[in-house]
Image (cartoon, rainbow, N blue to C red; front, side, top):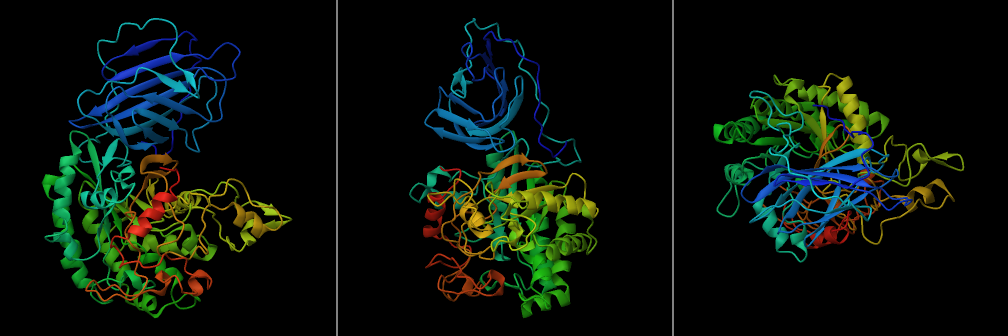
Length: 580
């Protein structure tokens, strides 16, 4: 299976209307009025799988009229179907009415051109297919009578790979686990039910999280719940492996429980128990995505001696090698389990996008991926922007733009970076990693949980061309004071909803960081989790070399990292883009 997006092209279809329907599929033809500069349309709506309370569907829309540069497809359900997750389109629902809009890469449809998108949904009772669709306001229902339905429903390619092999993209054709603990917290917030059924990552950020407690679910409890959610289809469980010795050497807020030299405890008390649980044959039918050690490896490039951003703790971790050792050991142990898909953290464009960071980081990822007996075959992909805020795609300026002869790269915001957003960075990093020997089908994940930057402050056009700075600052979606700001950012919003295969080389947009969970406390709070106080979480802090000595941009009154922060959740809802 290719990781690139496919858009099919079909022959010009007849202008006469036709509707055929069964309990599993519907095909709808239609045309616009004569002479109208609007498209006619054909829609194939196919239920690809169905279980007790849920279903998956694929929709193919074909333009049979004039070419269009953007499309909106609308339909209404006769029952209580609710869309819970989609991909390759922006899906919204109000009551029974559903609207699907193109995303950036599939809006153009020539005459006879087609594109497809999919989604998962819930239902009870019957699950009839919609009878009527509208493309850009034109009803796809010609004047002729329906033909006799086919006696057998059309088949679709299986989403389950052959025994002993892995799916090229684990997210394709699969539901993704909804953490009931996060879901309950989100649903309890005003407006939170709009997103409380979205899938998020489960963070195993300390040894105690493996077994859980009387008030929190452990790993087995999550996997058992995932089996209940799975039904007869495929389901992805997203785990964050995050407990290295000397963890997060440049960010005190997320320091961990293990000291810099405790690599033995990391192996035997943390990774080995996780691997033992994941290897239980009971869970062999789940697709388990592990995102391995957020923020660790990039620190060994950017925050060590010789850099103005250096910290003594990062020098220690580079010298003792325990980040490399720990990541290699985790990849080997977890990668040996047939249904586990390892994704290594690869920072974000505002961290590693500069020339002197990009290449050395990729080389370091290769070093870690081949340490402790691990090989590149133990790595299914990489994840970027985890728990960060970098915009998915900046539309109002590109890295090649210039203003009055001055390159965008020279603006204060871009500051000679090679990339302006996460999508371009992720795709470039993928190309670099493949060139270093990683699998040609390597997939990338982008965490879009907090990079929407919507609301009233979202620009709708490029900034004025007075200077390169006014041009960039006036048009950028990312409204942070500096790319180096990372803690509980004011003005941030929920980003693209989780979806599979949204762009070339991208396995999925994910919400690996559960929205509403704090990045760190605004002031020092005693705790038994090893978490320190980082001034970057203090809204009065005036900064350091890692954020250009800017104000931190953090929200006030935040709790410890990982704890629920209602004010942040409300900020994310308010500034969501796409809007809720």
